[in-house]
Length: 88
Image 1 (cartoon, rainbow, N blue to C red):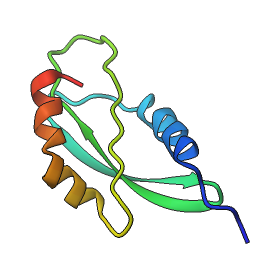
Image 2 (image 1 turned 135 degrees about the vertical axis):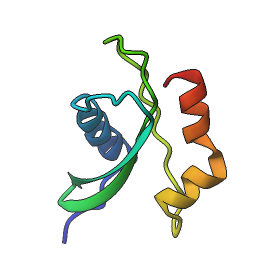
Image 3 (image 1 turned 90 degrees about the vertical axis):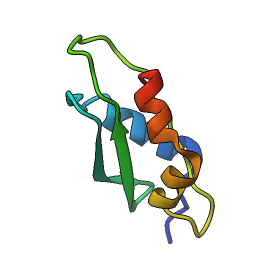
Image 4 (image 1 turned 45 degrees about the vertical axis):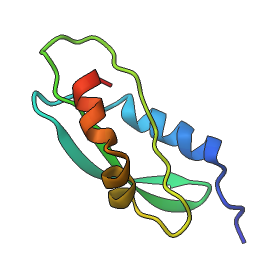
């Protein structure tokens, strides 16, 4: 039996995944799968619109609670709209 992945392991995997994302001109939501701690975990990645420059953007990770979903967390937090407005 494998040990559950820690929050730090999941965050590290998401950061590695996010570093490879090419930012679109328009905001986009993309589903991906990450292998963390021997388990495949789905992730929803929101990328804000860009102004065409190649500057790095901050990475913000939003975890939902047990029994929650990525869609529910995104909807309840309004984090995508905030990311679009604040450029992160």
